[in-house]
Amino acid sequence: MDYSVNIELDLMDENVSKSIFDGVLPDHETVPYERSKVTFNREGSKLKMVIKAEDLSALRGTVSSYLRWISTSRKLIK
Image 1 (cartoon, rainbow, N blue to C red):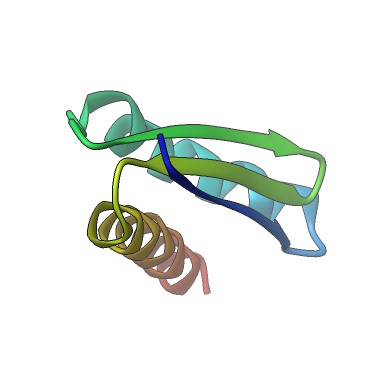
Image 2: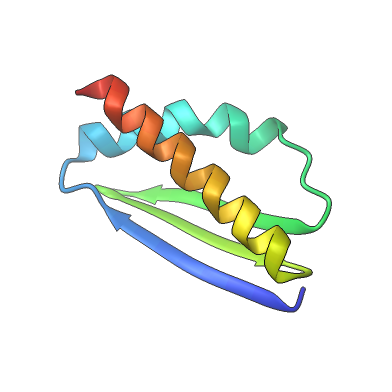
């Protein structure tokens, strides 16, 4: 994989972090990405992702998907 990005989001609340992580996890486990690989985990109030991809287009698409899933989950919690 030629391109990578590390993303760490501190949601400042462990319960919110757990709820969002639990909401995104089914998508993370079932979406079959062919050109990218994602490590997704939670540490306390932080969500951490390492996204690696073969090309910039795959990297952008994968980052967008994860951030959209997280944003949607966050809006549903509010």
